Image (tube, rainbow, N blue to C red; front, side):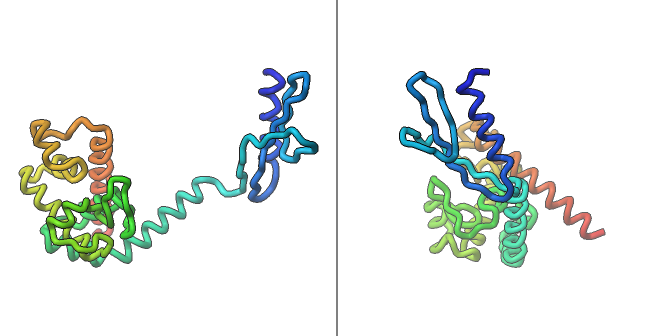
Length: 210
């Protein structure tokens, strides 16, 4: 291993050994002979900041766990509204929960880079179509989203895979591909995710009823 490649390893190893949460600035200096030095405390001029590192005792899994816990709290708070909207639209609550988890992780303030908004990520045209004036209002969003999902199920003869695919890619995309899930990687991942969440929800409810 060359001298320039060895030094970053040494520096990072030292920094990783520090206890607690640390924000480290790593500086680089090349002398007149071409030798490279890396340090978190430059002692003279000529050093250039090359990267910031943050190290800490918390593992990424902790942040994931916190995020899941927060999502579960939002789910519990919204459950009565979700079940009421599902019932009004003649849908299984487990399916509506699956779509909401995949779409927004139960965040009523969610906004996608394409402009979809709210719990069920309604596009402006869809929101208008189903009379949703404020897509960030959970009650309105759920009413519009569940009615749209029910309409898709009817349109595709209650084929759940096609209805879910149409919810993501649009009903015309499913029709254009001969009533099949479009070959879009995003849509195919979405269908697998929603159906996976749906199966989990059904299994959890069955266990809870025993």
